[in-house]
Image (cartoon, rainbow, N blue to C red):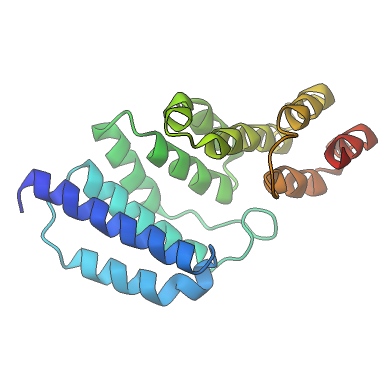
Length: 200
């Protein structure tokens, strides 16, 4: 398969993976059979080992790993998987500017409890990429996860958390779900002032 065909085919598989996840409303356990089938089909393709190939394989294995562990990292840490980590690293070594993959790699590290490393990866993401695509919720989520990492690492102030909550007050839905779950596990940071800010 020619390199350009590899990239096109790999991203076609990635699109299918995300369609499966969206179909099951991010219930990775229910999505497992279809994700596993997709991985098996991808493994039988004659891909040239380019950045897109490594991104595809790392993503599929990561999603399948998530299907076996519930509510990471709040109830259970995702066990580290060298296949996922190596494939993400290899992809980013080849394509150094890939904000969507950086985000996914950061999520993997976050799920495995590697909060210092996750914070570093999230902090290096060019969030203008997501703003340019009008994906402002993704840009906010990255900032939220950086805050969560700092809370787990005990490297954040009450003022920083309150400021972030205020900056995102106009967002709809449960956009601060990760922050709340993180605060529940780090009770000393879940102050009355922060609780009040979340209710406003």
